[in-house]
Length: 226
Image 1 (cartoon, rainbow, N blue to C red):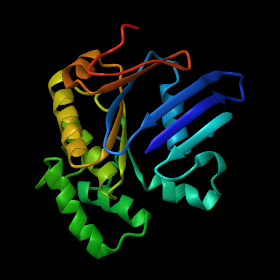
Image 2 (cartoon, rainbow, N blue to C red):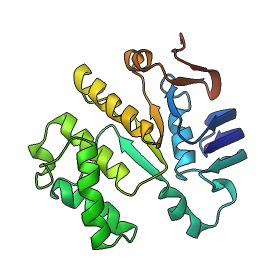
Image 3 (cartoon, rainbow, N blue to C red):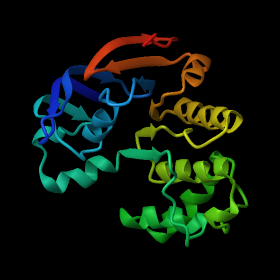
């Protein structure tokens, strides 16, 4: 579960990114976070992942409290999260299998667990038989599926997708969103940051709209007219 309670964030350069944000995302929800550039979306993601901390207010991320957390707890919190980026961020000189096993080794998974988990995740994202391919041998949509598999491989309780379809054509975008919907139906909480109105309208999920550092609407099945 994610909780932001009256959260403010002002950066060192004086930018007031968040101005009293209250947000709750329960376990198992699928939520779109929308808003114009500079509205505060990226700051919310950075707060959730522990990249930055609130100037004021309180937070809870999957049982952790980032605003008063010990340094050695940060990696534990981040293991509950899987993050998907617009630019994929795959390691070009590693195969699909190696990209996934690298992430698993980083958190101390055994070889046995790696051999068990990776085939399951590749099947889930529709990439069976691609484990020995390098990223440049895959289409853009397939590379994004690898990025989703990488986010899933350590079995996080929440997936954060930051503009996950920004580099894809409309058909591939719908396929990626269908995949995230299916992952959500298996029990993983999903938060998608996007500018793409058509995707939001098509999927009819909860939509949180932010503008100028404030949440201006929070409803299910629509898009705000901002």
